[in-house]
Image (cartoon, rainbow, N blue to C red):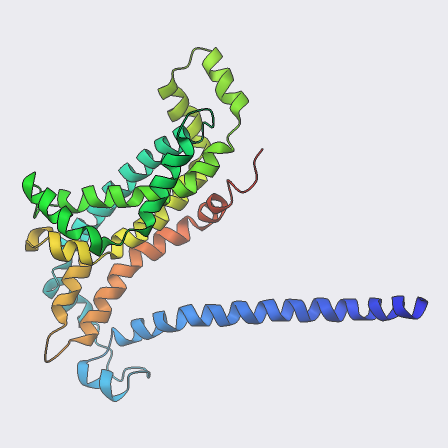
Length: 287
């Protein structure tokens, strides 16, 4: 029996070391899997078209810094970047606030049909954008919003609600009810409770939803392509496509535009990484 204990004790550190080595290897491989395309994109953004095809994976011999200035003017990033910021920021802000209201209401277990409404909202994640683009086109044209920035903002708000409700409802259900009841007894209205108690307590979840929705709204291509047909209301993904032609493609300008488009999202994520991680687990444990 003692020999078996000695064997298990000798295997303990070895097993622990192998476990840490395996986890480290997995993390390194995952990091390389993500960072390699980013590095390739940054290097390719400084290449000319001939050099891109001659040496696609090597460093450029002549670093074409002017690719960025050309991309800024020829892809009209000076116009499409503010449009993208305005559309994404407005849609994310309104969608997140509405999702918080819905999640807080659905978290009240005593209310009838709460689970049915929750399922209905979450089912919106299963609806592809291609299935709703035609009725969306007809409705926006009928109300006079077609070809405007509101034609992008309104659908984005609606399409951001399912994810917000899915993430925020468990977080709202885990809020301390005694604090909310105490606020009611002190005379606070439901709006005061929502803005001064519920919203601050759900801040990590709100940031997570804002990041998740903001990333896909920022990069969304199909809806702006169909609904924002006017050049003055186009977003960055649509503007970048202008470099892709039937017979030739300015790959250096494409990648430099993508770098400019990706940079704000990466910076926002890095600044809010901790809130994003805590928000994803905020509703995991109730209490």
